Image (cartoon, rainbow, N blue to C red; front, side, top):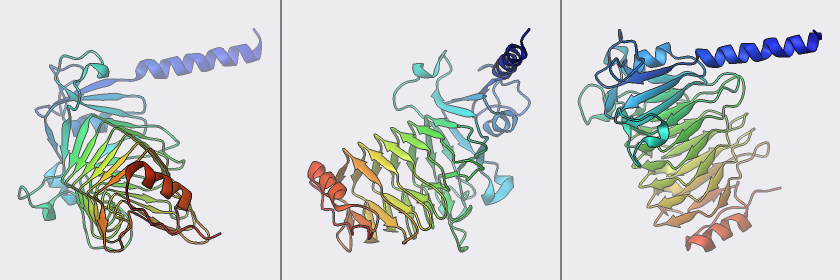
Amino acid sequence: MDYNVKYLLLLAGFVLSVTCMAERLYVSPQGSVNATGTNWNSTLTLNAALARSEKGDEIWTLRGTYLLNQAEGRSATFNIPAGVRVYGGFNGTEAGTDQRGNNTYSVLSGEMGTRGDLSDNAFTVVTMLSDAGSVSTLDGFTVRDGSARNFLDGINKGSAGGGLYIAAGSRLSTHLITNCLFTNNKAHNGGAVLVDSGRPSFFNCEFKNNSADFNGGAVYNKGIATVASPIFRNCTFEFNSSNSGAGMTNNGSNGSANPLVLNCAFVDNTSLMNGAAIYNITNDNGEAEPVLEGCSFIGNESILGDEVSGRGVSRPVAALAGQKSGGSLRPVARKK
């Protein structure tokens, strides 16, 4: 047999064996660390399933609220391994993810200590790990009550991404976050989400009532000396607040933060200073130039009166967005 043919057959066999080894693990709020996790009658805890899962595996979670291990302290987080798909919102009768009801979620909460007191909650509720371009999925969850406010300098774990922290990896991540609600999360930067480089996609997500002390009440795209250019499609940013960029902050200093924002709504977001909806930060060696298509801007407020602010938005793009929505956009054109 020809050597190339043998090689291809061996490679095909290896890929098939890896595929066959992929697991589906079942999780419920009442799950056990000692369960098999192979069906709804023997469910694992979420932390146990995440610890057991590997690239290619799926985790199905029953509706209900999932809390972190309080014994681990405020650094506890639901770590999603690279390449693992995590689905929520099941009632226990579905045979496929498409059989879940609309707007049905499992809740991932950062609550610890005194209920309703964010000051003792987990810094970050969910962390998506990144490795060699492996794509992870988070689908069908409410992510809430994270509080990344450790009062340390810098944009890092503990001070950014109260709801979700997408970690940097050896290659740019392309994770998928879909049908998720991020609410009541706080941080110094990136109240709900911190994208620490990568090109993740957010589809049909809501960012509601999140806040940041500084930038990015809902989302902070950290393209500092790297690339952080996610896609947001059919997403809503509502009632978020920050010093600047209540809906989204894009920092492309010495790098690029050029998100694609499609058919998204920015509603009643409030910034103390700049960019009630979007704030862009860059320098002569970087880019922060979001592409906005079919977006609406309604009732957003900031002291400077602009909804999109910073050096990264061209006047034609901003003007078109304003025409489509009736919003008041006054960006500063990027200097060439």
